[in-house]
Image 1 (cartoon, rainbow, N blue to C red):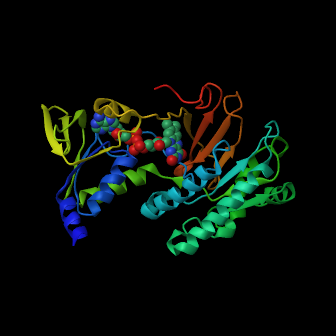
Image 2 (spheres, rainbow, N blue to C red):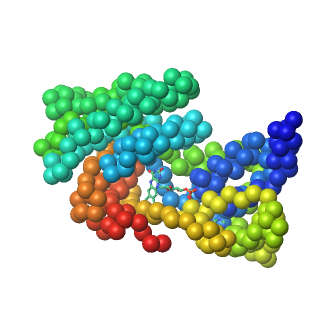
Image 3 (cartoon, protein in one colour):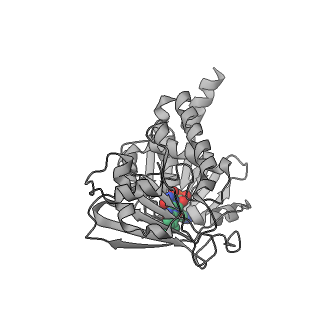
Length: 334
Ligand SMILES: Cc1cc2nc3c(=O)[nH]c(=O)nc-3n(C[C@H](O)[C@H](O)[C@H](O)COP(=O)(O)OP(=O)(O)OC[C@H]3O[C@@H](n4cnc5c(N)ncnc54)[C@H](O)[C@@H]3O)c2cc1C
């Protein structure tokens, strides 16, 4: 009875979500699907149009520096994301290579990979729908030099089906004398932000209780004097500033969320990661590629490098070298 009353009260509640990036748009979609009255404010011309996302961190294998607990959290969050947005995923694995000049060894990564594999196995045991990263036994696979040299002689496979098929373009292109063995393949897939953006936009259009305001900047937020909610001041392009009252507020303004926190007097510590990304078209690519990560020590000229394939022969190179790194001085100040 109490729960029913609470649910009814909640359904009448008005919720403002500020920011239509992946966080805000997903929050609006979830709350809207529960039948709640949601208004999503996005200052850009469309939803999910901010910084890129191209790699599903299903286990956090990209980052040697983070803890096992953080990796397990990333595994769980990635499984949730795959279950929520299955249409936004490019199903291809990731290969991790440790360069010979790097002080780390591939075998140092194995305890964590085994932990993640066993966590994935338990998550499937608790709910079979969690099986979205392939078979548990395939979560990662090691390739020694002999196996790699045998794969080098194989022809390209136009539509890779087996793990080995994905490895062929990698081993045909990298200098085997410059990497340590084994090479590691993990089930970290690609994220297609364009499919995600269009899928979310179409889904939100169908939810009558969810209002999406594009080209609409939230300029100020204040708490109501009786602390029963929030007054949001916003301006739609070409129109005068307006105000609306809400019972709940979701601050999903991305790296600008601090501006809203500051307006409300909330003090938060946040991390800002800097990264360079270059996109190129490679007409001679003869097959589909996995992603390839070259591990490297953060904050040095030979920091991590990431080679990300997109459909249609496009590739993105990202770097985290000395001048482009989160780890230079720890946290960035703003
Ligand atoms: C080069 C690069 C590569 C990356 N690669 C990956 C990757 O491979 N995998 C991965 O998981 N992540 C990746 N990221 C990180 C990822 O892009 C972010 O974590 C993600 O976009 C954060 O989403 P968000 O919704 O929190 O914020 P955002 O995407 O920043 O969205 C915030 C939204 O709020 C809107 N907004 C802000 N202020 C207001 C206001 N006052 N009024 C109205 N609207 C407002 C903005 O216009 C924006 O649309 C990468 C980032 C970069 C820079």
